[in-house]
Amino acid sequence: MEEQQGKEEQILIRITGQDRPGLTASIMEILARHDAQIMDIGQADIHSSLSLGILIRIEEYSAGQVMKELLFKATELNVHIGFEPIDDEKYEDWVGGQGKNRYILTLIGRTLTAKNIEATTSVIAKQGLNIDSIVRLTGRQSLKKPVKNIRSCIEFSLRGTPVDRTTLQADLMRLSSEMGIDFSFQKDNMYRRMRRLICFDMDSTLIQTECIDELAIKAGVGDQVKAITESAMRGEIDFKESFRQRVELLKGLDVSVMQEIAENLPITEGADRLMAVLKRYGYKIAILSGGFTYFGEYLRQRFGVDYMYANELEVDENGKLTGRYVGEIVDGHRKAELLKLIAQVERVDLAQTIAVGDGANDLQMIAEAGLGIAFHAKPRVVADARQSINTMGLDGVLYFLGFKDSYLGDQGKL
Image 1 (cartoon, rainbow, N blue to C red):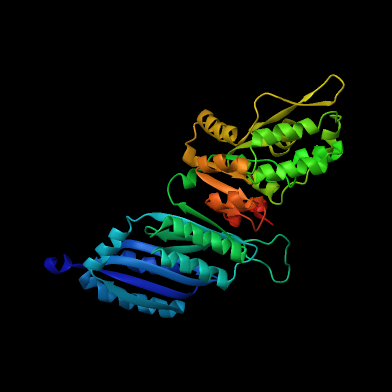
Image 2 (cartoon, rainbow, N blue to C red):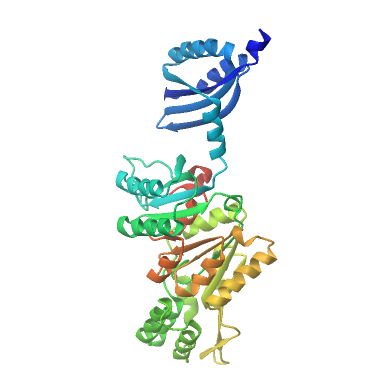
């Protein structure tokens, strides 16, 4: 008898059907009585429909009795149950596969269709990656009470090594452009789960305007400044030179107009929700802007931002802009330097940092950060960034960080 008891086998148990409280406990009670080892377990619940998988290792002489009891229990619970023996070689192959690289692919859009998911999973399959799990991060939408600013997000947990990471990224960006959906492809490691510092561009990121353009309109040189701004954001001219040219055109403008502009800044959709969540969960937040300190300070106070760096305009004794600036220009290179400096001060690894921006002068900062996100960005920026958000508001960043609406309480509401 002792020799018989020494033989063990693996059995994969699959249970499907209507979920109910206590179902898993009922199954485990039977397995516990027979001293089964749980080698693996996973459960998903889709619209109250349960899919539960349990891999057990158990003495051979007990296996038949366990399956018999489980069959009776399944009938009692009105669920389907199946069994599959897993031999030692197959089990070892499975264990070996667990050491492969793991990635998280996040898919977001206003809505997600079967075509969107089919196209995404085809890219995954072409790269030889296996989908371990699929989780919806956004809440379910009511049919009777539709809401505005609807959003949808699905997160894929992947295992394996991409055949060609460059091709994978290009294929995802192509789908993003063609289908109006956005992606984030990240290695699933400890840093992804422990982001601590996030740096934002200001103009056309936190706010839906360029402050220098607003000032230029007040000064009567709107068209001239806007043309220079757009050229700089596309990366066609050096940012520092474009900055000097634009600031010179503001000479003579009364500084009082800045308050009026600040009080009417168009805040980007989702910014308030994003900032509230980041503060609640202890993130350090920085604004690194090629714009101006007056407006950066206004947003710093509104959102409770920890760090703010921007450009300071010189004002004469009569309260007029002189057409000059004070101190070092915050350009793309300076933004990247500041990100690294703040990370050092906060004792945060660069892999734990996030950078969000839209213009060419954000590219260095986006490249330096552990997670760089192009937000409603210029084509050149989108092409160079690994992650981009073009379909929804700034709170789309939360899904790239792995937040679920259900985690956020009232702040998770649309």
